[in-house]
Length: 225
Image (cartoon, rainbow, N blue to C red; front, side):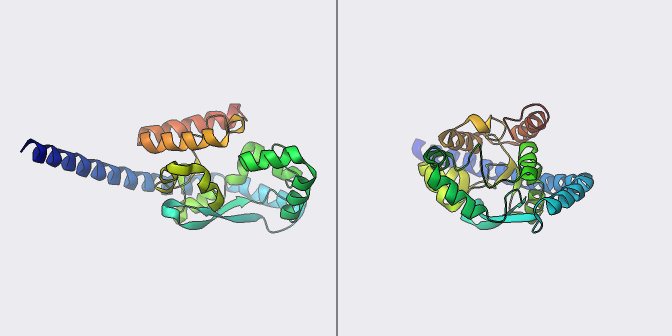
């Protein structure tokens, strides 16, 4: 009898948690849509200037899309302003073949502090995170959220190990816990840990806290976003 009662209580708690999560997801989707529309309208003059300067720097295309893994493992085209030269893949392979330290850095973190593929305008856009403005379009498509784990490519999922569900059950975000936690000084294992922490503790309050911290990082701390 006691066992049956405990089971009923657990089922009731799970049901309430699912309902609460559904309500939070709906509120978050509405917020994402409104925020993205407002951001694109507000940033339109900046977008126009960036497009002109990028075209002068390295011609077209101005937007770069790359396959990323989204919620439930669905692939999507993640958008950014193109910060790399048009021969980026060839430049990277040549650089890694000639530089053992850089190759180890790439294999460990999937990024390089001194990336030979990035042109001068691209370095500025990356430093200021302005290259990610097109991702507001991904948010409007429902492929990304304002807050969530940074989108990964398929081969990166293996590095999440048993915590892969912590990524796959969430919608990737423009900003997130890792992005505001000194991402340039954290290892990939740290990134996985932060994504798992966000998955376990996510809430609207945490999202707004991350957005607030993102503003501070963008304005005062170039080591974050």
